[in-house]
Amino acid sequence: MLVNDVLVMILAGGEGKRLYPLTRDRAKPAVPFGGRYRIIDFVINNFVNSGFYKIKILTQYKSDSLNKHITRGWVLSPFLNQFVDLVPAQMRTDGAWYKGTADAIYQNLNQIDDENAKYVCVFGGDHVYKMDVTQMLKYHKKRKADLTISAIPVPVSLAHEYGIIEVDEDWRLTGFVEKPQHKPKTIPGRDDYCLASMGNYIFNSSNLKKELISDSKVQDSKHDFGKNIIPNMLENGSRVYVYDFSKNEFAGMTKSEAGYWRDVGTVDAYWQANMDLLSYLPELNLYSESWPLRTFNYNYPPAKFIWEEGDRVGTATNSMVSEGCIISGGSISRCVLSPKVRINSFTNVVDSILMENVNIGRHCEIRKAIIDKNVDIPAYAKIGVCREEDEARGFYVSEGGVTVVPKGAKL
Image (cartoon, rainbow, N blue to C red):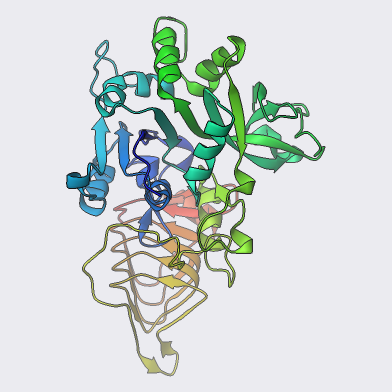
């Protein structure tokens, strides 16, 4: 299905402070995921697979690696008016950077006018999921909505971690509570679940422009969709409906993938989402031909596993190994390896994520660690074995015990 009257605007300028130090040198949407991907690849693939080919990516914070990834990996056909365009903060209004999610769109209203879009999809660029967006758009049109918000059911016990949406029997928005400390309003007919906002919106362009212009004139506004735009639309009687993401279906969907959505906003959540990929029947299947996951293709040779001499054996079990990797007489188990990783002899790596161009020396022991790009681990090093030693070396260790070695670290 080709969608011509919709402009997609992906918000990709976030700092991702809770994911530090992985976001020390890059925006959160540019953080590698699943070996060969970047987090932003998932939302772009969702739109391209759904037939949306007019895509603007709004960037701001440390966007260099994100810019390179999009420019090199996401080239559509300009002859057919198809594009994935980067839109850096241009300070078009008062010479300021984006002040909030709503202000980011407000400063780029010219993009909507230039494309003469009837509908505007405003989606975040920092979540991992699959979604056929055409189903949400059909729902939006059927409801004759001014705004449709995508939400996912979550247990009431987890409500304090999300912005919670309240709806009536017709799934029309009635309220919004940010990270409630007390039991929020539950889904009609489901007392044990409430609705968490995914930060994904479909607007009628005329309503969106009107609301953004009005909000821009309010000096004490946070210029944020969740804090200002949506409450204002609720107050002025706009038709705001909620789309149940758990009912979304996409081509090739497996039973385990139904309703899968992850906010990989913390080191522990990011590590767990990567580990989930290694299951026999993962909740997120990267291998589906019906719903392909595209990204920038590296021109590296195949992965290689060498040596079989006594204890010197190159092996990988329950792991994902990208192109250009060499497992040279060492072993890995439950690991995700980005391209050009080398594991040297007599080394053992378990439950870890190794990013591009990481070299692990001989006789090392690595456990439950994330090692960012361009790190050379010397022989006999131990990481993730003793929390106190890791912290003494200046490494971040999460609440869940994940040790992070930052990009380019010198050991």
